[in-house]
Structures are given as C-alpha cells and as structure tokens.
Image (cartoon, rainbow, N blue to C red; front, side, top):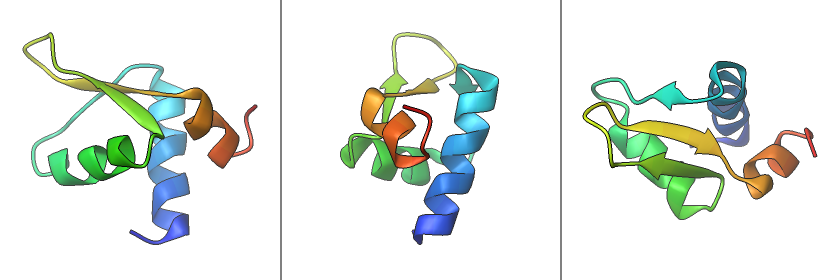
Length: 62
C-alpha cells in the first residue's frame, strides 16, 4: 500500500474507534498490523482493528 492509502485507512479506523474488518479487507488490515500500526481483535465473531500508538503517530495524532 502507498502512504496515502495507509493514512486514509488509519483515519477511518481512528474515526470509528473500533473498526470492523469488512470482507475483502483482511489483507490490508493484516498488513497494517504487521507494520505495528493497528491491533486486530480476533476474539470476536466480527474482527475489528484499533490504532496502536505507532498508528496514531503515523497519522499525526500523537
């Protein structure tokens, strides 16, 4: 993903506080998680992602 795509997706996750992972987006969210920018909660039926401190810093919300 390009930086603009990453920032856009992180902004959406940040606005939703706990962003449900929609079908077809798993790979993008897993990429963000591998970069340390989000944490995916896999404990629920509907997986969801939240920004990590590194994710907040990446978009300038630190």
